[in-house]
Length: 193
Image (cartoon, rainbow, N blue to C red; front, side):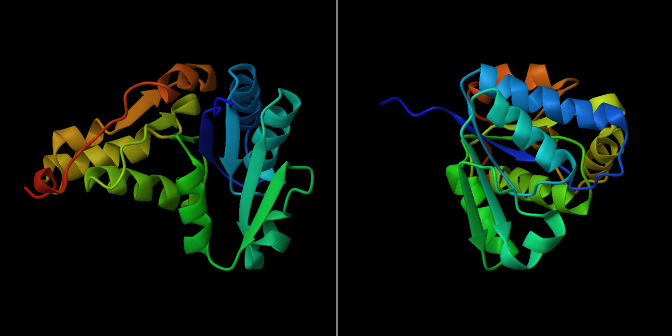
């Protein structure tokens, strides 16, 4: 049996967000299922997390949620998934999501989404990962984040090739073809200026 690609999606758990962000989560989940891809994500039933999971399930994806025990009650662990893994720590959660993913796609989100995304970018920068990292810049949401990366390059704290670790797209549908592209790579030797 051929393994289907598994995409890890990082996104927000807040329900108090604009409709354009909610629509992007539904579009991404549907696109994953239609492309024959599976989903691994943070395991919540609320916010963009729940929307992307529900849409992926409806479109035929196998969906795995990974959530730490202490967050299960806040993010309301999704009980309708193919698999819900409960971890003891946030570190365990991120490690399992990473291990199960062939690529990472980031939708709008808050501090947790920033953390997860920056960690996989850093792993690539250090040569610990070669999996694609795709940022869906819905309605310009990620413009300030991208400006911060460019600022760090301009000030000598990062190199221009580090920005190239990220693939930037405007819509969820544009992310799908990038999942199968050759991964971005870096090496620790290139990290230091």
